[in-house]
Picture 1 (spheres, helix red, strand yellow):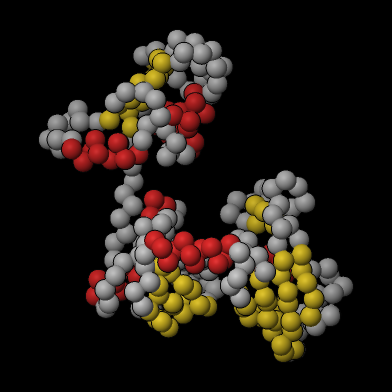
Picture 2 (cartoon, rainbow, N blue to C red):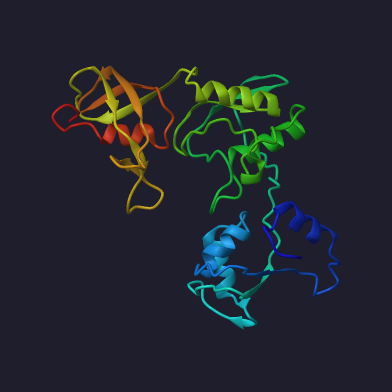
Length: 281
C-alpha cells in the first residue's frame, strides 16, 4: 500500500481479498517526509493512520512493526526531511457485534426505534475490556430472534450502532435506540436541542437544604484519575446544569429527583458530590 493517509476501508478491503494461505499477505505502507517536520514518529503516524490511536501506534513501534530508513527505532524519534517510514499494519478490529441471548425489558418498539427499561449492572455498548454482555449484544439477538429490524448504522465504527444516548452501567432507566439512520439523527437532534425531559431518582447520603435547587458547575475529565470526571473551571470544563428536588427524607438518607438540563458524562454523580457541605450533608 502506498503512503498518504491510510483509509480504514481500503485496509479492510486489502485483508478481505488477501490470500490466507500466503504468510506474506500483510498490509505494508511507506511514507517519505518531504518536509523537515522535526515531529515525533508516533505523532506523525497518528496523522497518517487516523483510525488508530496513539497508544496503538506506540505498540506497533514497540513490536518492531515500524522502521525508519530500514532501522527499528523508538516512538520519540524525531523525523527529518527525507526519512522513509515503513509500517506493517494489522487488520482493523472487527466492528461486528455478536448476538447474545440477554433478557431485555422492551417498553415500546416500532419500525423506527426501540425503547428499553435498562436494568442495572449492564453496559450499554462494547468498550475496552467489555466486548460482550452488553445491551447492544442483547439487542442484536432480539432483532434476530424476537422481532425484525436492526440498529442504525450511525456509530457502528465505534461498536455503538443505534445508541442515541447512554446510561451508566449501574444506572437503571428508560433508554431509546434507533433502528434506522433517519430516526437516529432526528432523536439525536432532540437531545442536542435539549427537547428531551430527563429525570432520575437517586438515594443520597445526608439531609438536604434547601429541598430544591440548581447544581451548576462545569464538568470534564478528572485531571489525574483515569475514567473519572470532576468539576473543572478551565478550558476542558463543559457547562452542566442539574435541578434537584427532594422527594422523601429518611434516617440519614434522602430520595432525590434529579432533572438533567445537560447530558454530561457522570453528571449526576459528580453534581451530587459537588454540593457545598453545609447544604448537602
